[in-house]
Length: 270
Image 1 (spheres, rainbow, N blue to C red):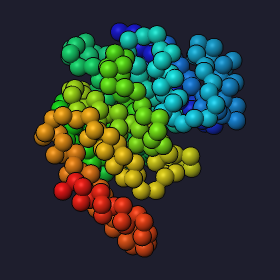
Image 2 (cartoon, rainbow, N blue to C red; image 1 turned 135 degrees about the vertical axis):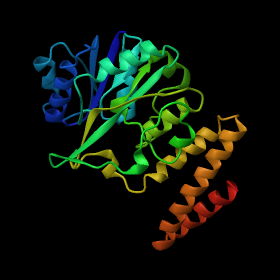
Image 3 (cartoon, rainbow, N blue to C red; image 1 turned 180 degrees about the vertical axis):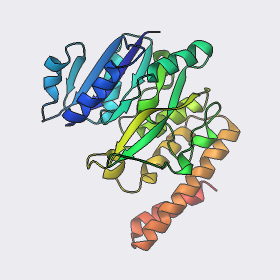
Image 4 (tube, rainbow, N blue to C red; image 1 turned 90 degrees about the vertical axis):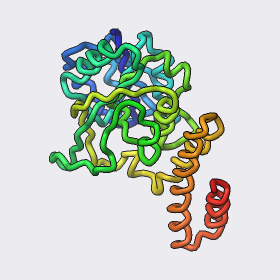
């Protein structure tokens, strides 16, 4: 299997170097490594000289989704592995996933378990982020339990279901994984093969409050394309649940316009 690694980055030069070294140290070598620089103003461009084997692509700042999508378009191989520039891979990450797909040739996407590090110490992952493989659509509706850095995906699958939604500032991965899980089996390699580092200020998950504001947009979009009655019912149930939580938050802070909007949304999903 020939694999292209796509790494989006923005002003994370030191983290990016760490991520690249973890790719280059893989026991199963990637055939291509693409770094998409999303308009960095730090030393990121210097990786062209430091890592001459890496294909460096620059774009004006447009967000992580466009950066990943640009990497996909430029990938020359049939399999794509994503890696966020503040994460790292364990040495056998690609090897384990390649073995999985060789044994399960009909599965076009897999992901792995992960470990979280904060202040140089491993932290316990909440139970709600437990990993599941197989038919995981229903289990994926509440939260995004698939880290982009853990995925390995056949490019043809992305051509079919679409790329990352560039209109979503965050939760773009939640959106894409649901679109895939709606019709495809997703394999799990149940080993902690990536490391996610928490605590730095530019993490998107910390930058935005009320992530459900973005998840409901993904759910509504999913409803417009879903023709499976059982899945439609599940999507509506989850959307109603999330809008109810958003309504409580709006009521707490007397946000009148948001209250009215969320009340209408809840009614529409009943």
